Image (cartoon, rainbow, N blue to C red):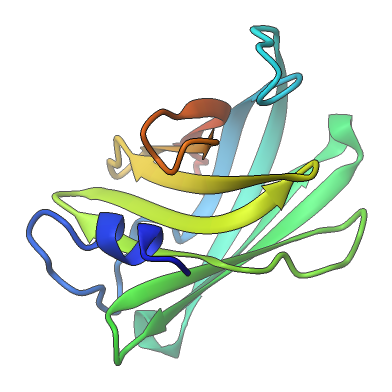
Length: 170
C-alpha cells in the first residue's frame, strides 16, 4: 500500500492492535443497512435493507469471522479479520456469496480512541480509489460501520454504505 492505510490508521494514541479488539462484535446482530445507489457519481439516493450477522472469535481474539445474511438482497457475505502481531495492524478480508471471490487487497488498520479505521487502495469501476471502513459508536448492544471512498488521496470522502447494528437477545 502506498502509505495511506498505515499512516492514517496509526495516528492518535499509536497503540498497536491487540487480540480482542473485535470482541465487541462477537454474537448475533440485527442491522439496518443503507447503501448509496451509485457511489462516486454525484448520486444522493440511498436504499435500505435489513441484515443479520453472527460473529465469532478465533485464535484467542487475534482472529474474528462474521457472516452477514441479507435475504432481501439475495446474498450473504463473510468477513475474516486477522491481527498481524508483528505490525499491530488488523487485515480485514471480505467475500460475497454472489462471487465467492475473496476481496483483495484487504483493508488494514487499527482502533484509536475507540474508533477503528481501516484503509486500502483499489479500483472501483476502473477508477483508482482509497477505501475506508470505520467502526464507531460501539457499545455493549450497538455498533456502527461505514464505508467511504476517496478519489483524491484521502482529502475528501464519500460515504456509500452505513450499517447500524443492534445486538440480538440470545
